[in-house]
Length: 217
Image (cartoon, rainbow, N blue to C red):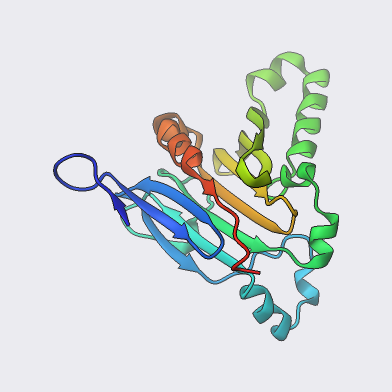
């Protein structure tokens, strides 16, 4: 389904998972592709049997997002990306995951944000001028999110220093009211790219809409 932008070509397209009630609007120039999962949050991938992996795949929906001219599944989260890339995800948590997950855990699903912030704070204490001038980690936005139907979680934007340069990550991580379904939208690119496309990335993040259903249970 496309959204028309007046006369001419549509400006936006919708990425949807109607079964689980996840909806996302992205620019029409972006590419997206459903991908095999799962991302093994909360469990040790080394202990996953082929049968369990197949079961996990049936519990997860992942769509890669790529603002580049061609979709490249191998480069969806790379620090030197010149254009926004990332993924949207719906994951029905395993019972052991659902019992253990907290809203605070959502902050650290992509990067250990709390550890990175603590390390940056320690660096500032040791070298106040240098650490602030060239931070290894910079938290740009840190918001608690409350949506309809009890959907709740966090929205973070942070800059991280890597060997390939500075990367900026826009992360929305949400749980349903029963804390049994994880919804995520992760977008990233180089910090130069983010300076150029941050408004567009922000619009995509704001469009991330959750209308929980029980059809995917």
